[in-house]
Length: 435
Image 1 (cartoon, rainbow, N blue to C red):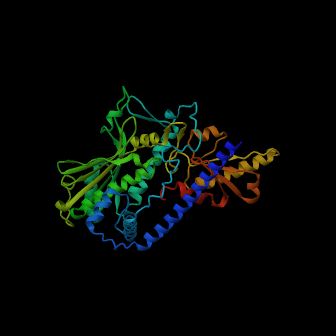
Image 2 (cartoon, rainbow, N blue to C red):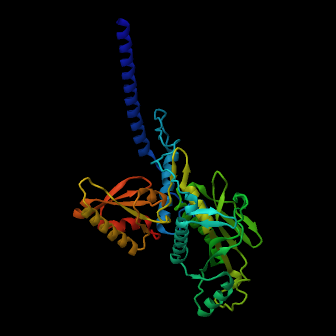
Image 3 (cartoon, helix red, strand yellow):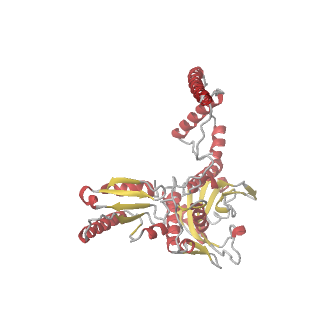
């Protein structure tokens, strides 16, 4: 008995010593931190054009505006504080349980239906699209057109490859070719891409590309070339589940041009989704023009070519995580359908109640479709899973009384309660191409 009491006192004393030490170290650390923060004197950061150009090449933030400069100054000041700050030895790091583990939000089982043929697959002649794949390709093209043509800061005109010279002549005659301006082309290209990952007995004879050609003065063209690299990399990264997979390759300098690719890293091989070209000599394009507004020798060209087919394959491959569970999550902006609907069943529900809820769902569905959002009406949750619908709207009997509906985010399985009059705004903030 005496031995047990001694062991118990020993454990209690050890526990108290640890607690007191922890409290003492915490107090010391707080005093040290406060003292060092008060004594930190950091001079004002000086940012010149050379620094900005280098940072723009390495980052995704543009510094051609006041907000960008403010972000840069704040980042530099914060880094200076971290560099000059000494962390006491008593401070122990806090480990995040997610640092070395994958977070799986839910089990997402692949259905018996072959999802690969439902979306995209290889055939002997190239890419083959299923029902959902055609919608994915269409949404990706629409998203590209909105950002590269509609929302461009300068004029961009639609043309075809065989009519580029003719289009330039017309723009010159109409006097609407103020530099910078651009041309946009969407076509099927027979240029071979990503040959190393072609499946056996398969040859991709053509793939759909979306190309933009921008003309700029010599003094501005190099900066525009770097800006296009940042913009295009950022554009792809915003659509992916793993942004770090999309990287810029090393530039290749050829005769009168410089080329850089946007590449996506996968275990099975890398996929090039876009090529950006800086062209020094554009005389061949303007050979038939009689332009008098500027010297052709002073005009350079930046061209970026995105493969919509290879882009769809890369985004689908990125959305699938093979691990403890199978997750297939597409970005809502390019998913084939944005919203699906379901009815929350109640035990005392009659056929009349179900009919009223069905009419309410049709009303909500029509509201979203008139605003341009793709919706799908289905009877089972299995179809919703197969179509990768990002948002599911659930209605119940109480929805008919107070107008409250619940929207479940498929990627997080979290549901939010909103009034049905805010449904369009809610979906637009998460699925609109322009946001």
